[in-house]
Structure formats: structure tokens, C-alpha cells
Image (cartoon, rainbow over the protein chains, first blue to last red):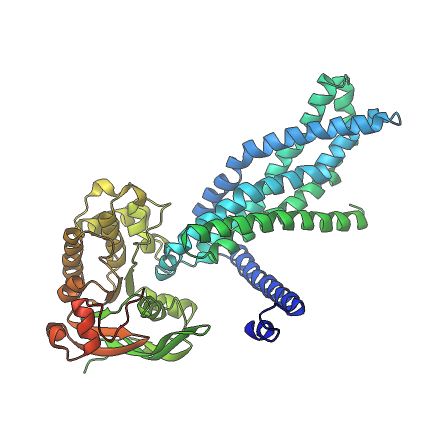
Length: 271
Length: 254
């Protein structure tokens, strides 16, 4: 189907054909990803569950992400406090630093930063692992041994990501707010007790909940993108490397897009 | 004639404009060892994947023990796979699991056997392929290529299958290790009374393990006969392959 459009104009690619082809392949890809995601979610939500694999993945995805999530959160919280102070200073509103830091971290940055960091650490890792298993025939071997890859490989990763992301976001929330407090108290001369009291007074359950709901969706995106790109990885080191790159970029963009859409939704329903 | 354990009837498979299988007809009887020869790109692996149900043919039928399994899914497919073993070319051992869990994988996952019992069975099976219990807790990456092949063989035979597939069992091994693997394959397949289909381009291996030899060329079986007449097949293609000559009707794939 691709040759006809280029050969007519004597080898010069027809831009309309090019755009059409790109659009078609985009839709086809979205369709394939959608079907794949449906299969993963279907396998994840119906028994039997592979609890041993689930636990293993929760440790790999959740526990081992703690350092990277904690470090990212402390720096984001610190930078946020500094910026709000500088901005607020211009119209005498610097006392709102604790309020805006806790709002920004719980509703937005705690989840987004965790999602982005895991899109790097976890998605690329999953894609590389599944891709390597695919090219060394381990996925075929699973099938011949009567193990369904959706149940044995993909569903545990999906569930582990959806379950551990909210926990990681909770950690990111706490450490992020702490980052803001550190800068405010030690660099900006805020009173520690007042800062903490203002933070606690302004903190609402709804704001935290918003971040946690986002985290579940990010978890799904992160696991599915990793498994999807890995399971269609081409042979060789380049194939696996490409799968890891594509999965990571795709997951990061989707995390940010999903974040915006959910923020819009939550604002509209007043959460 | 006894009913074949596996039969492929006019199986065709294409990838885009690349017609890999152009109508493969082959069958293997219970207890028989069939070796399928074929050069690089002749469609050997695709044929094997169709037979195993890892790919679905575009047309044609696949019968396992008399049942049409061409489009079977789910439980019926699993029931068929429970009676088959497969030794992958690269071994395809699971890197994340120790050797014994690899060998006992089907027992642990599909058959829900207790771990202690499964480990015992795995160690017994490892003994059959001349591997000691000491390697049971190692990981596949810690083993040599020959040992990995043996572990993979143990995994293929642990559930006593009726049909075992071997995908280039000796590729990548030195001649002595390759010969040892051939001996093990013959010994274990005989002990199980299983049928086997091996695809290979290693003539030494083919001569040793085959009852019958068939040749796959450009997606079709072009010759089939008893292993002992392979040198007098009367087929130019087979002759060129058996003697490894660059000149002849088959163009080298370079």
C-alpha cells in the first residue's frame, strides 16, 4: 500500500500520502495498544492471580523505587518553596509558601514526579526485560509450558505498579512537603512551628486523594507501556534498546497527558 | 498404518509478501524420530512454531493425535501442550528462576505441585541428563552452553511428553558436547517412547538421531526417506545439503 503513493510522483514522497500514512499507522498503533491493554487489565482483574510473581514485582517496582522517588520529591519540594517565596515576595504574599507547597505537592507534583521517575526506571526496565525474554524465546517457552504470559508476566507487573504507585506517591507527598519546609526554615527564615501548623491546617484529604487516584492511573500507564513495547520488541540489542526507549518516552508523555486530563476532571467535579 | 501423533496438511504461512511456508505436508508416528533438514531461511522455525501452536497457519490443518488443533485455544490447547515438550534453540531458560524451578516449571505452575515434591522431581530429571543436584540452585546464566542445553532438555522431558520438538539442539556447541547432547536425546526419547521432531542443519546430529529424514526447501517438504539412505537420496537438493557444497541447485543464503 505504501509504494503506489511514492512511485507516481517519480520517487519524491507525496506529503499528503506521508501524512495519511503516519495518521493511519498512529491509529493502528493506538488500536493495538488498546487491545493489548484490555487483555492485560482483563488478566489482572480475574483469578487466578500469581501471588508469588505479584510480590516479586511489588518489591522490584515499589520498594526499589523509594530512593529515586524520595530524592526527586525533596528537590521538587525545595525548589517549589523557593519559587513561591520569590514570586510571592513581589506582592507581599510570601506567608502562603506552606499552603501552596502542600497543595502543589499533593495535588500535582508528588504524583507527576513519581510517575515520570518511574516511567524512566520501571517502564524501561520492564520493556528491556520482556524484550530480552521475547528475543531469547522465553515467552514462547512460557506458552509451551502452559503458562499464559498475560497472567504470568504482564498482569503481575500491572497490578504491582497500580498498587505500589499510590504508596510511593504518599511517600513523595510527605518528603516533598518536607523539602519545602527545609528550605523555608533553614534558608528563608520561616518559623518551623508556624510553617508546620499552616501546612497541616491547609492540608485536606481531597487533595491527597487526587494525587493517589492519579497514581493508580500512572501505574497502569507505566506497566502497560513497558510490557507492550517489550512484547513486540525486535531481535537483537538494537531491538531491545529501541523497545526500552519507545516505552519510556511513550509512558512519560502519557503520564503528563493523563495528568492534565485528570486535573481538568477533578477541578470540574470539584474534588 | 498407525495414526500419526502429529500431522501437518498443506500448511501455509506468509509474512506480508514473504511466503515462508508454501504448503507443508509432514507427519510423524508415535515413537518415531523424524529429522527435518533445511538451510537458513527455509522456514524450519516457522514450521515448528505452527506445529506448537505459537503461530496460526494462514491455511492448511494441523492434527495432534487425530484431533484438528489448527485453531484451538484455551483448555484444549493447554491439554495438547501438556503432552508435548520443546527444546528451544537457545535453551530459552528463564533467567530469573533457579535451574530446578526452570526444570519443574510446568509442575509448579500448570500442575500446582508442592515445591518440595517438584524440586525432587527436578533433581531426578537433572540426573537423567547427567547433571548433579549441586546445580539445582544455580541460575541459568551461571551455566555453560552445554549445561544450559541439558537443563532445557530436562525441562522438556520432565512431564514425560509423547512428542518432543528439538530446534537445532546442537547449534553453538563444540563437536564433543554436541555428540553428548545427541546421545542424551536418543537415550531420553527412547526411554520415554516418545516421538520426536528435530530441525537441524547439523548432518552429524541428523544421522545420529533420525529414523527418518525430511528436507524442507523454500517452504515445502521436497524429500523424505529413511535415515540410512540419506547419502543415496537421488535428490540433487538433498545431496548438495548433505555434502555441504556451495554449488548446486540451492543458492547459498549470503
